[in-house]
Length: 140
Image (cartoon, rainbow, N blue to C red; front, side, top):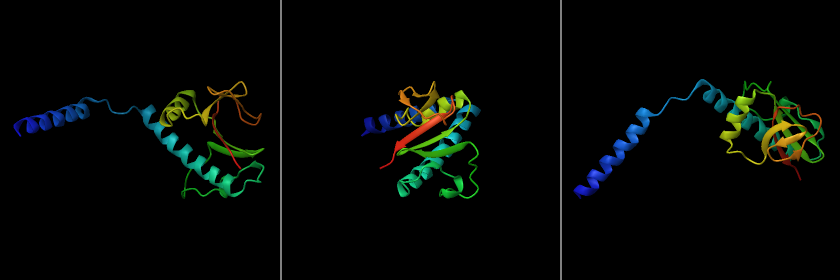
């Protein structure tokens, strides 16, 4: 019984030391996390629209999406093109890296580079600007 108590105490101390000596998140980390959440909310709403309207072609206006009241959507765009829903936004490269890390480098997300979704190699349509954060989903 004493061994179990000592073991539990040591585990608690290890956990506490991790909290005490870990570095606080940087401003870039916090901004990246906030953008990741914003992008995720917008992407989910766009994908829901795409599933509900699979015949839609062209831009998906933000006012057609079910989004939280007051959400700023200026960064994000969505468009249906030949059965694929594209969601993208032009943001600085460091923030793109932070967002991709938040999504654990999902194969549905990447950065537009030379007309492809980097690092996965999917060919992107011309309306997606180089350098943009991009997520895509096939709609059936």
